[in-house]
Image (cartoon, rainbow over the protein chains, first blue to last red):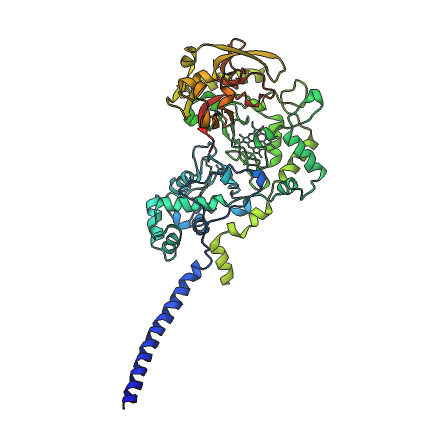
Length: 381
Length: 163
């Protein structure tokens, strides 16, 4: 009977074990359900890859290093409508990937239906920018992101409420823990993650980039356009030019300069002067990147020009005089003693051909930048 | 004729209609200094004037008047003269313009014990205040072939160590 007892005991232990196994099994299923959302989240430092000729003058604050999990969270938040007062707007509403992160509108509508005072800006190669907005008033992406989130005419919700709303979701507390070590969601953590994602928006595979690394042979028009773009006009020496590169030059077509490019004699929007109060800063705005410029119409801080042809016409023939007009646009002419650039119709076409070389289809189709929700939606169907 | 009149009126308006535009440009001197400075016209007036002649883009010689840059930096307590040795030789002056343009000078480029070349912060050209597009303050580098470091509309000067 001894054996019988033993057997009995054995059976009991086994039963107990199977219980724990069952519990474990159920737990595993639950866990896998959870990790279904967190499974694709890789962790570790994010490797920012870019061409050497872009240079290494990049800005990453010491307290917000770029990590794979941070970029993932930032991307979720970039497309998160819960961050707006009526759950309808996200950053993506005014910054859409297929338009190089612009929205195709002159001015954009916020949650309250009021139009933004300025044109939405393309988000590309922000890693190399130090001053943000058309007037450069924000010193860093983290500082910048607070404005659209909280401005009543944009997403219109305090950071505290945004943090609260995300805390109540099933997914975000886990994601914040993965990124910051605990589930605490704060406004600061939200803007940091968004900024990490924005730093990865690198555009470096336009035909112009390919040309620079010897992988693309430009057409004759593109080549002539590039020359005109980069040369200053010197009619005495027979050199024709449009001098665009003086402000928009370099491999990134972005140099972080601020100028008045002659749109108005009396600017309605005073630009930088609104906070420097200097006469010479009237109507001075950021010289924006020209990357993907063919995709980001309408143009200028108020979206006044619908086409690149209108833009080139402006520089060629319609620069308006004022005390703050950039000296780079004064007295630049292809005619000796001329007052304006006076480009020929064929030259205008060539410049536009060059501007089209700056379109980076790899950038606008990169799945890493796309809405993560619409991707899972696709795989579900 | 009509067009000229309109432009003249607009120009006038642009000076009168916007009353809050009253500030005068100043230059902040900061970074590796013992005394941060804010330079304005009155400040420059107190320092000895120096003149440098150089060709401008028009190909003609112009006479620029201003103050030797090193004198301003000495007032800010920058390590020039006998102190410019050892690790202090890895310091540079970064000059910024109102359009965001920046250029740098190694401190040794500015020091009289290293070079006779004069670099000034000018506020006058040929005896007149600089044109608004160039001034009120502009760096003039004597004999430098390209004008790229003769930075216009200077707004800030910072001394830093190379990292």
